[in-house]
Image (cartoon, rainbow, N blue to C red; front, side):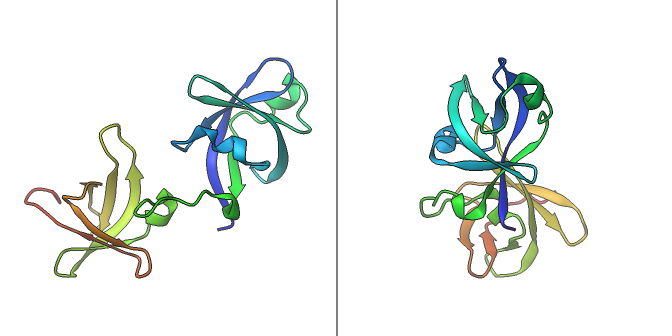
Length: 164
């Protein structure tokens, strides 16, 4: 995968072709550090970034009026993978976690991380078992003992009732 989805154009703002963007990051200022983005498969140079509450407002080269901007409503926004930010140690992108093999403290395979549900309290890792049942594990140190990206495994501590 060479492009990473970072948001979606959800509406237009004003008459000059600005796009209102719902961003998938906890760091909306990230768009100020970028020079280009992709709307679906078309590359655009970023010529302006501002904010409206929690939304990012982007001005892109070549989208100069409201009519042109309207054509892009609902489109996903991507960046090149090499443009992603380096994260602090023990912090991971969701796309890195999905697909990890989940094992218990004894090394027995439990399933695979199939989704990460972002919650106000803490993230929840959705684990799909071999029998297609799914369960959630809170992304806290009490349950997540180790994430090893080299071996693509997540070691977890299970408590009674967690997998039901």
